[in-house]
Amino acid sequence: MGKKIFVSVIILIILVLLTDLVILPWWVNREETKVPNVVGLRENEAIALLEENDLNPILSDTTFNESYPKGTIVLQRPDQGSVVKVGRRIYLFISGGEPTVVVPLLKGKSVRYAKFALERIGLKLGNVDQIPSNSPKNMIFDQEFVEGTPIKKGQTVSISVSSGVETGEIFVPDLIGKSLLEAGKLLADSLLKVGKINYQISFSLLPNTIIDQYPSKDTKLNPGDPVDLFVTKSSDIQIKNEIEEK
Image (tube, rainbow, N blue to C red; front, side, top):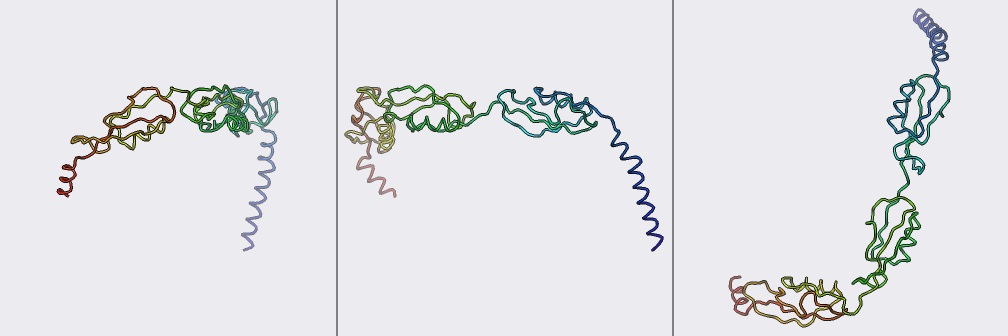
């Protein structure tokens, strides 16, 4: 037991002497170098220059900065000119370029809402174009950038606002071949309405299919005007046969 303790003490003394006489002097007296300036360089250029000077580059973080292009070094620690030991870690901060924000959804909103929503995230309202549209008056129906598009902070976003529909400006849509349900939706979207429905027997087309319309497509109407529809229906014989088949 005593012999083991003696051996352990000897080993400990040797380690202490080794640290004091070899490791510490090497650490204290090892070669020094001056940190070069890498601010403004691209990431790969900065890394290469630091490694040439026997330094250890570490990519630390990305920060938005308008003064430095994206991918260049905006900050280094320690600073340029610092005298450090060879192998010292040099922390690099990369520029993410100019800060960007995501364009919000403006369609279906008012101009007042758009102005507030844009300014709140650092954007500006651009041109406001008043254009005749089937959309409700004073509602935004189009925007310069699609919702979710990232753009530079401070940029302008132009919008198109509905001035309503003027007399005789609505074109009748083509309804022939559509179902009665589809035709009703198309007319509603065009600010028109279904007029008289005239049923006609058809042996070749499905029931409730539009075979004619009045007025015809591309005729100009006013908001709320009716469009008469000519719609197919099954004959009594067809209906009877279908029932018997079932």
